[in-house]
Image 1 (tube, one colour):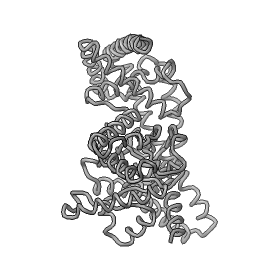
Image 2 (cartoon, one colour; image 1 turned 45 degrees about the vertical axis):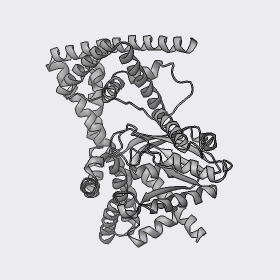
Image 3 (cartoon, helix red, strand yellow; image 1 turned 180 degrees about the vertical axis):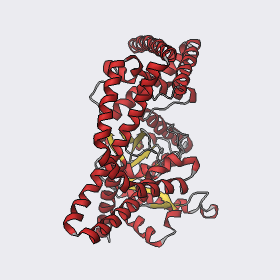
Image 4 (spheres, one colour; image 1 turned 90 degrees about the horizontal axis):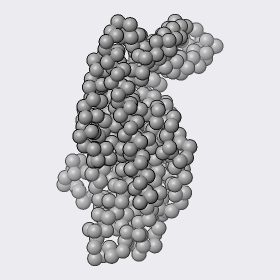
Length: 466
């Protein structure tokens, strides 16, 4: 049975990698070398993407990770058998069955058994998944589990907690990106001193350490106003910051670079509000005015700068118009085949996801349904072509489907950008006053950001040398 379980786990992991590869344009691993290659490990992660988070962590580390899943998934006997073979551990939550909460102890014991055998368990201390990316209050379950197990073994088990930060660029959108950021492992035994006498304090201390580590792995903003300012500053200034930054000390992948620089912007925003509150509030108001004007003109973020570049804008419009004409036949061919499965995926993602956590649940719902929707529809298309035209033709037809599908997707993406550029061109020539005011506001904001950046750098440098 162990061999069967290993084969099933390997097969499922391979299928999940394929599904993730189709849905996400890029899954980047940052500091993957920090993942312990052996010994008991508890992976503690933020939880912005529902089941997709487990998919990503489970396929990103070179060892099997056992995850805890709601007992509701084990109601269907065949699925329960498959989940157990893959090492999934059932847990009864209060909302599942309040009368059966004693089964939580059995879940802990099942996790202990895996860890005592030198295995790995994945846990999400926030408890539930949320649509927004901000870290919620960390529950004490992970710390309590880790300390209890290490205490049983007198601090000699060697259990480590590896914090994992997951950052999605736009989790609900097909072909988006995700960053998996690993931190240095936490040695649980170091938090065990005096555990018998001060159990609550030890648990609180370890939970605080986990929460602090997770906050450092993602862009954590305690206030909504900070989040709005940081996002607007990123749209204005991130590309310039990448070109001339002195923050990064090592070569990074694109998403990791965005994360580090975004957190630097967040830190600077918090420092500015704390140090110069009136100046920060005035900047926030001006930034809001700029964003409102840009939204009124229906200008996407990346096209605002083109308002001052007539020649480049016209060249872009002409080149993309030529691409639109040349690529139209293949794009139409691809979209004709994609319409039905895409409609099915969107219907399921809307109909069977929780409105309060739709963004978080859309990725795994789309991936799981997409396997059957695209597989079933494409199989039907191939069968019909085979019946009408025979094998030689149907073979080339099969090969054309995935290529045409990807081309149609990127063609549509480029055409949307072309429409934005055309709208920008209209504004450039027909609404000169609005263009002039928007560019003026943009220049003022960039100058203020640059000045604030210099002051923040001087402050950080002074603090480090003091």
